[in-house]
Length: 263
Image 1 (spheres, rainbow, N blue to C red):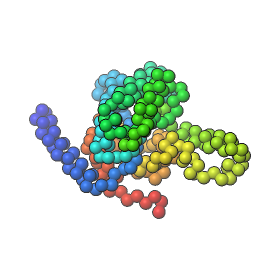
Image 2: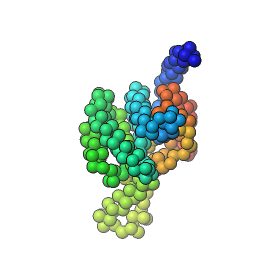
Image 3: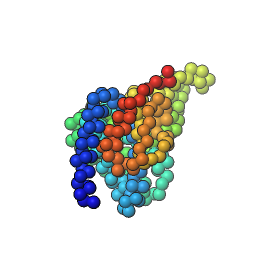
Image 4: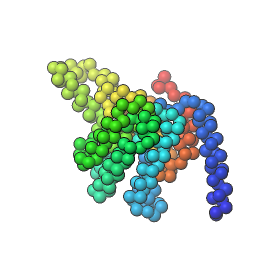
């Protein structure tokens, strides 16, 4: 078994290098990559470890994938780390996640990679019910990177696609009401662009490629408005086990597709 493991390592390295050359040679990369980080708890369960360790491995993987995106020059990435439904889980689990979010936000705020690559970080979602220390850490991270012009990293935390659309409608109606317009007038002139301008990701290109790990073949509410023309890739591996070759295979698959945008 040890001999097989040793033999597999150079083969894995060679295959990863070949995939990377192919992906780079093609040149067409996602301009906005969406990532649904699914399977942390199942990874822990299968490995016989505590649930919390699954999240720790998942965080490490997120840092690793961020590095891959930086190396390839992907300009925008949105990672979904907590949904509005996840907040309804066991209170102890949610409390642990909140502790991790605060810790990681403070780490990212001083991460040399973030500043060296001028990565702008935004936390998108509904955070009004988060503990104050968590919202403060997220706000400070955003503020410290607000002026950067490199890669944009959206962290979708406390995020739900339906909630985002509802928030956009509310914001549009409020602004129109303040301008003295009636509901009938607003309804008569309502256009999709009005809501696009109110989304959490307003001003950012819609995701052209979305990857979900863990074998689940659904969006579960991820960027429902923005993903109308996204390409999807569903990977069986749990998020903490997501390898560089899995990432490169997904990108190569995206590059082989012909996007028609309904035409």
